[in-house]
Length: 426
Ligand SMILES: O=C(O)C1=C[C@@H](OP(=O)(O)O)[C@@H](O)[C@H](O)C1
Ligand SMILES: C=C(OP(=O)(O)O)C(=O)O
Image (cartoon, rainbow, N blue to C red; front, side, top):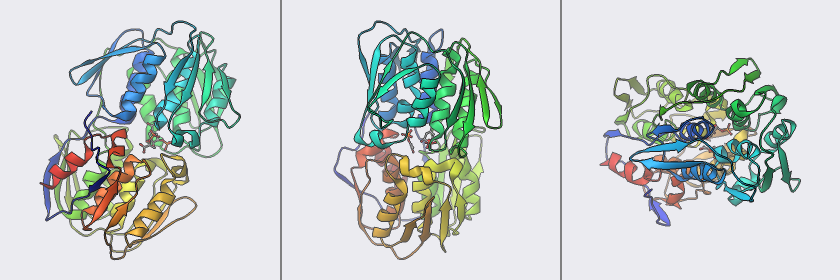
């Protein structure tokens, strides 16, 4: 897992219109769902083309701590079924991976030992209490210090009853995905009734249902009620799609620098939120053509200002915000209050950083107001957030002197990002 270990990275300026083909690594969200479902399966699963990054390794590490095992097979990973063993205490390292923090506690509830969950400072501030509450109601024994956040300990009693539960998943769709992914292994499956506001990131919920079906489960959804019966899972061979959210800065690059960028292997059909970038490009006045080989994005050099509700595609916000700093007029982004509980408070970070380069950017209760203005160089602080490194790279395409702090943090989802970015620019 190579990566940029320098303390800063000088984001390169595009010297002219782009003409590049880019391959991006596997989807974090699909990889980590496939690993969880593979571990819960009755037989081994060959996960093809998975992501290899900090978050993916944390997930494999978590499964190992919970009694799973896996082996690298070329660019693929063979995952063995989980065999929860023993009563000796264990530990799961969360890093700052939302998918690991939310998807694995239920798996510890299936075992018979106490497992401590903890990670980076940042994960201790990210929301998880509604999920822990729901798991307790389903029969999982969880001890915490009363804050409803890591560190916490799951004391497995050899299985989870499951059944009906209410869940407020408005702070993160991952709470709902966590219950649904583990539910086939609950004695009575699960019926989740959503309460509170609409969960963000709807495509990630659809992705959870899709992967459950691919592994042989039969999830059902009626509006805000979800049902997953207990089931024996199996999927001998599963191929991970390229990560379309990781592709976002490369798509944005065509719009910002002009020219053509082709993203290899863009799926014809997908549940990934990044697929929305195709319609965004059209809305912003760019060309986006899905071919048999991938997505061809043709930039016009002129970006239209836009009013965008990003509730369903929140993880794209940093890159979209950076791109809109080059628009021909003001833009408003809304529907993403939950980004304050992501890797960092992304709304505050984007307002501070983009403003420090000269753009007029303010954070609202649930989004950003962006008024383009002449930009200048400076240090882009990245708050240990991979997507802020990607946003900074987009800004640097047309602004000389953008120094990106701690570029290696992009290794959460794309360890080779800066190298791929530089080769796109030729
Ligand atoms: O389920 C997933 O894989 C994800 C869901 C989303 O989380 P939120 O619903 O918390 O935004 C997304 O932002 C995150 O990057 C990945
Ligand atoms: C919110 C994100 O990550 P996580 O999986 O840690 O929630 C993200 O990748 O933008």
